[in-house]
Length: 378
Ligand SMILES: *Cc1c(COP(=O)(O)O)cnc(C)c1O
Image 1 (cartoon, rainbow, N blue to C red):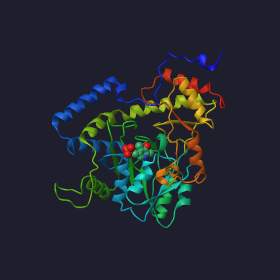
Image 2 (cartoon, rainbow, N blue to C red):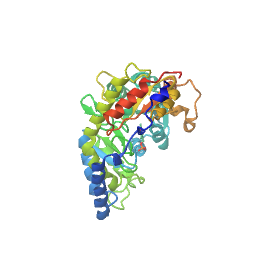
Image 3 (cartoon, rainbow, N blue to C red):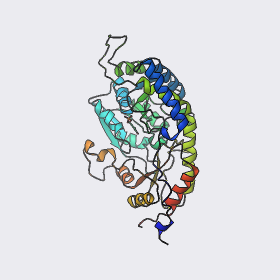
């Protein structure tokens, strides 16, 4: 019997992710929120935004949260609030979404792209220590995939070298780092509420959290024309607010975030257990007991493209986050191969499997069975 004969052609394809329409009760609740905000006709700033900011700050265990228009803006505004710009260098892992570096470039500073740990796929204090130079002002650890970076040695190094720390928490809303939520330990935590994220709105959105009242106030000014009060423009700012509609939707979804992250942790653990002993490799936690909220479930195979074709044939969708490390993109000069070898090898070998909170046990089983029947070189 050929492998294909064993494939159930009638089973529906499992997508990489599913959004709110997969949860009919939630969808009804969110549609009612849209109607409420539309009838109020209050679309920018106002009480929904303020309430969300209070609730999100409390959730993150951080004194201040400021809603902004995207995760990329969150990082840019955090940098600008700390007066980081032209002439300054910011250390960024090359194995991340390009936005982490773009936000740095957007304020006129230079991202110093560095390699990551081959086991955790994340930034380490050693890589930061090697990259620090006279112009370095800041480092941006990225809790990529929902997997938490080993922050303590990075925070200690930053204190010693007088560097600022921005946690890129766009993929890790609600994850714990030891006994604190991610985002609450750096000078800033920067979140994205892009629809697919663990906490996602119905469009673009983001937030910064910070323990520093002055920095929070500066981001508030910057995101809305430096204005406070109305028509008193204190500094040159921009339009980078979180819409009231997004804030109202996110308030509902924030109330479910811990339960949804628990679903992701449970599904992630089931996939890890089921995939042990198969032909794919799994990333390791950055430190003993590190939390993982599985924004993305990533595996590695030296024969990645064949793995993807095989899974597609078995009704399992896949993706690659990300096929090019940032230093190899055209935007960042398409550096020659070999400069950051771990990030480059990961980009060749990583494959994102489906994982979303409404995934069923049957879907988990189908994914495991499909991967288990993969033979590299097939
Ligand atoms: C999504 C993401 C961002 C950017 O967020 P946007 O809201 O899309 O601007 C930044 N960093 C990482 C790691 C991300 O995954």
